[in-house]
Amino acid sequence: MPTQEDQRRELSAFLRSRRERLTPDDVGLPRTGRRRTPGLRREELALLAGISATWYTYLEQGRDIRVSDQVLDALAATLRLDRHERGHLFQLAGHAPVAKAVQPEPLAAEVAAIPLLLQPSPAYIINGTYDVLSHNRAAEELFPNLIAVGGRGPNFARWVFLEPAARDVLIDWEHEARGLLARLRTLAARHPGDARYDELVDELKTGSQEVRSWWPRYDVQSRHGGRKRLRCPGREVADFAYTAFHLAEDPEQTLVIYSDEQEAEAVKLPDRT
Image 1 (cartoon, one colour):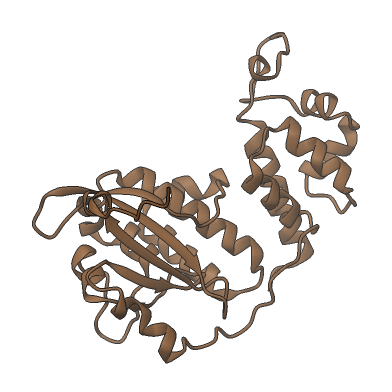
Image 2 (cartoon, helix red, strand yellow):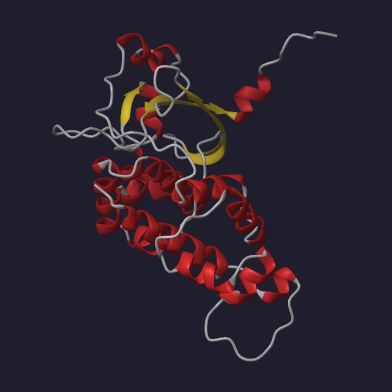
């Protein structure tokens, strides 16, 4: 179970990672003297945010101090955080509700059947730790070796980082892998103390040099739809659109549906004019 000290350490690392990404040129400050560290100095960031340099230093050092919404807003604006990063900042600072660590509910049979009804479109349902709870045959064919054997359930994050076939199927593997890891960090921050996230991240770090390198960057991102270039079973590359639907029974259970963009464009909607 993480302590408040663990949470403050996470907040400290996140602030430092974002401060080091900004340069004086980014914020209109003159360059003065040689810099020993990347990014803005703590004093510069505090000045731009309108807070005490000493107080900000204590915050980034992980000291036990209280912070207001106004200060967090000022820091988010100065650090140029997007809305996902801002939410992550408030989460780490204890200004957002934390999901309780509970035993995941089993997937209802009628919900598990949804991907089967969507055949031939590849579809699957995942939970917050990317365990694949249900899938159809088209998904199994599109993502080879995703469906595990030998008693261990399939997991999409493990497949992306630890399955060699993933780098062949995902044409833009690094972009997709970075995005997935950022979404995993966002979910993990909402569940401090949930051992499932810690165990998954530890496993990914052990098996993937990229995870060991990228995890300390503190990238965050919410689950969303989008587009991917995938190598299909016939070995041709196709553009896919994918859509993510959060289930009403459990918002962290997500139905993901893929459609070939060429096929989607061929479907004509009725003219409502």
